[in-house]
Amino acid sequence: MNRFREKYQKEVVPALVKEFNLRNPHQVPRISKVVVSAGVGRAVSDSKHLETTADTIAKVTGQHPVTTIARKSIASFKLREGNKVGVTTTLRGARAEAFLDLLVGAVLPRIRDFRGISATAFDAFGNYSLGITDHSIFPRFPSRMSACHMVCR
Image (cartoon, rainbow, N blue to C red; front, side, top):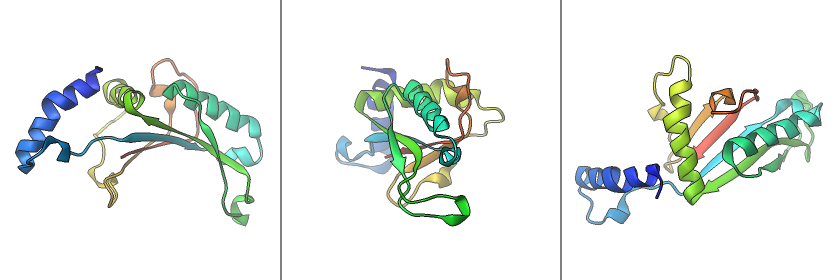
């Protein structure tokens, strides 16, 4: 069992059951998946940039990403329907827990002028979105990419 799951089971679940007066520990919210995605604006003119971003996401998450395709044409962005515009990967189970452990334990403390994560980034369904513009704060990954978004459900 990894550190994330152990801390969740031994500390977080009992605290939430007590705080919200839940009858069953299965009523406590849990993380079902982590989606890591990066939009690549320069991919329209340079497809090599998309490959670099895909390699970076694969190194950061430990899983091969899928290329995302534009659903609509947007003339002001010089974007046509069917163009490759980004990459995404979905982590579940132990990989999601290991990624969140790395994110909370090593990445977030490395962010310059970090003031905590925003409580307003939750949507109506309980999903959380966190944007990271530079992945060089991840251990062993010194190059840069355009954007990285995470959605924890």
